[in-house]
Length: 248
Image (cartoon, rainbow, N blue to C red; front, side, top):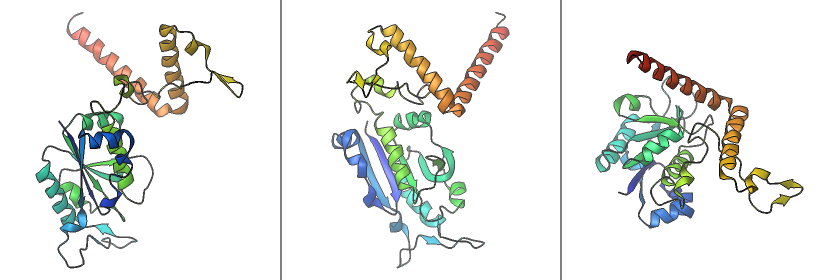
């Protein structure tokens, strides 16, 4: 099954962009995924093809109109009724690797790219749209975020990456940052590869990598470490409650 991506944007010329090269580009040419860009301006009804207007209540910038957005979303839904619609907005929930895996396992995704001051809020009440953000940053538009989300999905599609384990032993897959990597030469500017990685002892190597993942996550991303600890505690608590309920 081909993963079908639809991008609703005022700048369709930005796609496929970097997704047309390397792994994603090869997968696109081989038919592992497809890309359809939709010009939001095509759904404007006036002769100037107006898609935005001034903010209600005053203020700087312009806001994308809900009727135009709804027409574009409806058009995409007619073509891909099973695909979720994600709006790129800094007001959305941060996208996670778990959500990326869910998207990659599905039929595809429709990405709505904002510009100016963003979307008329009524579009989220009038249409089933998931608000997501890439990070706690503000971009000039949703297109760079859409490219990043699509890249994250495409690399997980069957056959896109060479090694099956490449998509598993990575940062965020287990709630941890990935362990550090090394390669030849064995010594560079007086810095050597850790001895355990040259030992050939796979059990020790696995233990070292797990420990480094945990240490680096705790030091660099205490927020991830805290969430991981909370999830473990909740799971253990649930298991204990279940044991008691069964009289064990």
